[in-house]
Length: 351
Ligand code: NAD
Ligand code: DAU
Image (cartoon, rainbow, N blue to C red):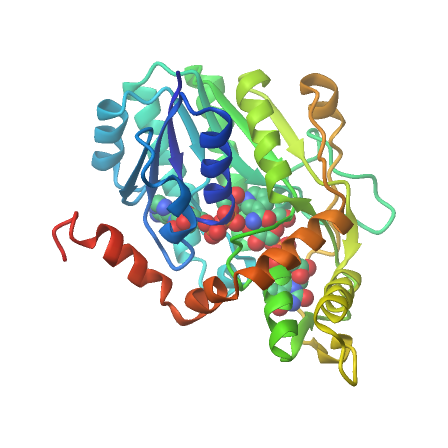
């Protein structure tokens, strides 16, 4: 039985991971430490909140006293570290929280692990963005690609990766890094491209595409990312880095048009296709042109590969958002925060 500390488990990928893990490994114990920033939503975890093997703790990964107490009290032997500020556009507007949480928060967890812990695994869930940007014909990033982060977000994740490496090299901490490409799927906060496009298209509102929409991302369905993390936690080698990707390189404009077409099919197009909602807007400063992941290492060594193509994954995702429009509206209006107060407020002495 593992005793896992998940950080950031109320966010998009973290909450998918917690549900995935409890489903596949019901014997393990999970403590979910999440500060509940704007991106954290405990409603995402309704399905597991009554499980005796699951516990939610609201708190900051930079709070070393809290982290130390949790390691002791929960006898943590595995860390799966998702907690981060994750939105590139926000990092361009205000980098401060990114440096604090992504760098100092990771340092706090590592330092606690170093001092108090004999562990099985400390996994940092990192990003392909640490490798910088590819040209149209460049080969995909492999694990030996140099780090060339271009945004405050990717620089902060790169710094966290470097700390992971240093703590393994210097102290022998059982650190593993995964670098993953763009995720999409259920429960993604609707400021990111896929859920934003779906909502705007459902509502008949403008869909903003940066520049000319020629930027390319390597899209992975979130459940595939979770199964990749499972492979690494179970069979990965300590001290190693594994790239995870979906093998689906799409231009933003093609992805947005596909979503419009899917919604036209499902809801009817009326007099004009939802493609007519697309608006080309001012580009993101320093916008990376292309990401693509070479996943041959994780496939060869751990036997993992993604299951979904973009066509199958995006169809599931569009259906999920159509069935969960209330969830989206509660997130947009901030109403999701009421659920925390109802569910946890009185237990924390505030109700
Ligand atoms: P998210 O923004 O949806 O969730 C982040 C979670 O971390 C939220 O629940 C938030 O409340 C929590 N958090 C933030 N600051 C905290 C703090 N100081 N203490 C405790 N909790 C805090 O992010 P996501 O898209 O689910 O990404 C999760 C992780 O995966 C991040 O580390 C991100 O860098 C990485 N990643 C994301 C993608 C992607 O496409 N979304 C791809 C590769 C890697
Ligand atoms: O590559 C992995 C990264 O993917 C993760 O590390 C990040 O945490 C995650 O947020 C994501 O970053 P991106 O910047 O790639 O995701 P985003 O959804 O913000 O943008 C995807 C692409 O779509 C990107 O090229 C910018 C573009 N875009 C985005 C928004 C929000 C638009 O054209 N219009 C938009 O309104």
